[in-house]
Image (tube, rainbow, N blue to C red; front, side, top):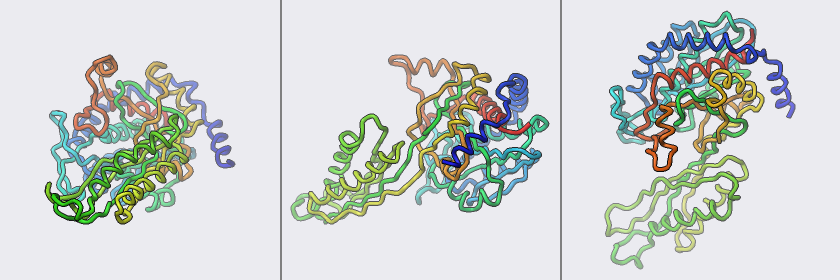
Length: 434
């Protein structure tokens, strides 16, 4: 509680830049507009050459090179493939800005002239790779913010810590960087910011106080049976039927045990077992994910999944399954005071209609690792689609727009990157010293 009070008091004494935003806003807009050709080139190169978690060697090298040109002191290979860039500009707050480096092991189907055809080895298999979560937009906005702040260095005092984090998609890169001394080898931030592209209209910014992402836990279960001939199931113990029972019954934990007003999801995304249709296998592997916001709901879902898995096997007289429930990312909980401080700037810069609070996303993010290390933080969202396209999709019978992780996810580059760079620059400037 003492730390929370201290953080709130510190925020209350921040320089009141939000009350004089007009000249700062114009300076930021002018600079981002002027540098856009550079950002466009970098963005399309990153988009065409994505790399998956902890393999982001080319990506990290490119960001490191660009940040050195801007005058940052850059350290590579933090948390295996992470980048940390520090810019000191006198006495003042230390502010961290994070971007993610990794893409996803999936094929892009946008048909864009700069579409990715890159491949990588993922889980022992060759796969296409693409930035279908928008991390390339984030990196371009990150670079644009860094350059804007350097060009405006006469307007602020403090230290910038720009972090290029690997392996966000596997919610493991933030921990890797912390374990490698992110907050001991480098200045620990007083405040931290991160953004995420979202299927909103470009030119818009979304944010909220409290939880803005979900807890995530992975499900890894092996149901055990006794193999045999498909024509004689009585001579075997069929693990496929056990797994099928579990997949159906586990949903009652969500629909009948969890408070219906609370968010909670259990999804089974993979079932692997057997080889051909007339052989009953010895075992079946089931893999899935659990998502929640609150700790009590998280605990209930974890207990429920384990209980139903064991009960499904017991009903068939089968051996107890191997059940692994693996903790992933914790929910990101924004600093209320920092959000309130930043909200005024966003509304002035983008207008009340384009800077609004939005519900928490159901996806997970390991930016929470930095927050939970004791750093007052704000995670927000920026739009990437043409406003008319978004409006049409919202109408009855309208064409749906591609969501993050879709092979068709295709942000409109220029306005999306400009919005990201402008919003992040203004948010950081609002907490730096004068």
